[in-house]
Length: 153
Image 1 (cartoon, rainbow, N blue to C red):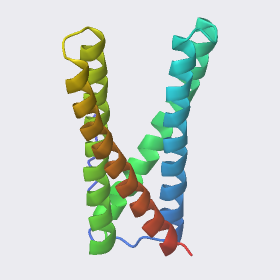
Image 2: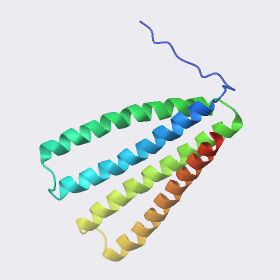
Image 3: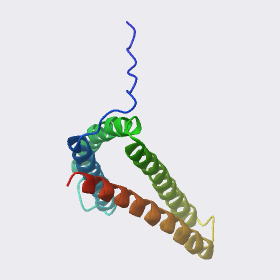
């Protein structure tokens, strides 16, 4: 059996419902990611039982996967639509990439510092740079979501 490839139709019409669904799902995704970080921190400090942590983490991850699928599907629709939505989708992709890179770099830096591979001075200098990049990416994403929300009013 051969899988059908679905070609997005260029110039697809974006409804306010599409935009609302996207922004709601994206906001929920951000909320769940924050919840995951909090859950990880609590588990690391031994505040919750391992079993409970695993169950809660899995539940959040499943919900996140669904939301990610939905936001990606809608983002594809945006990409194949008018230049405004297509442009916003591209900006969102770029900001998400920056955010992920900054978060990964922060994790690497924290790990290297805790192992004593880099000095505290180097750590402090670099962590500030990565934090700025992370903040900038988050504010870009929030700005895009705000612009999209305005379209639904």
